[in-house]
Image 1 (cartoon, rainbow, N blue to C red):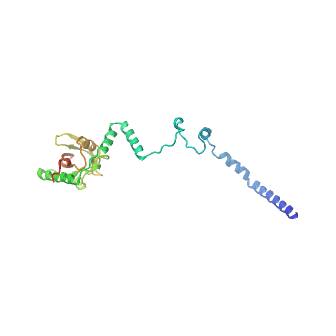
Image 2: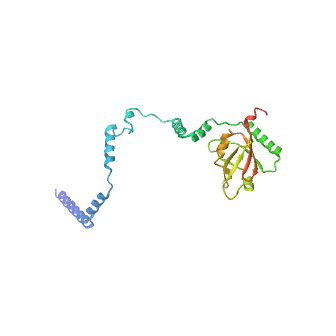
Image 3: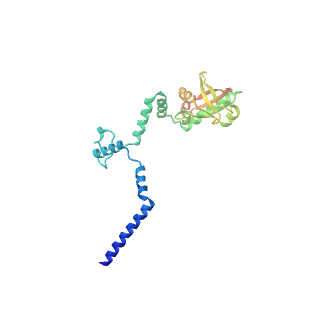
Length: 233
């Protein structure tokens, strides 16, 4: 019994000593200041959160529309999301629609058709025997669909095309129709305007083009279609 009384007395002294030290360090005032400075939750958000919890329960998923709140969750499939995005892009304007339509209708050339078009373009290059610089450029998917970027041979660009600034380069087809494109000298390729030329001339994967630099910033372009192969080999 005496031991228990001694323990309680020691405990009381310890508590009083701790309170004295806290008073000296002003810890009570510091705690009150921290509580006052702490950010308080928005009343509007608190009310909204409580209302949602009352209606749906703590573990139920929150639905934005009351019309479908009682329906089971529908799984989302990748193809559904993809087509949804495409539909929205199609509605936004003709430009996006034409790009997406071109992706859907892609043509994939066979190796033989591709080789045939290249051979015919090189044969035409020899036949022209032009005094103007020329080069042959086979078409791939990135040239005629999607990005519509046409990189040109680097050595040809360094030797014959503008070196210090971007310029407009005109493409002239075999019917003398002209299309202006934008040449990026650091990337040695055609950007704006090339897309229009490719679509207007219905270029596809495997076609091959012969470029003839007839003026400083003007190419005459000859088109050899991969579809002209028709099993000739």
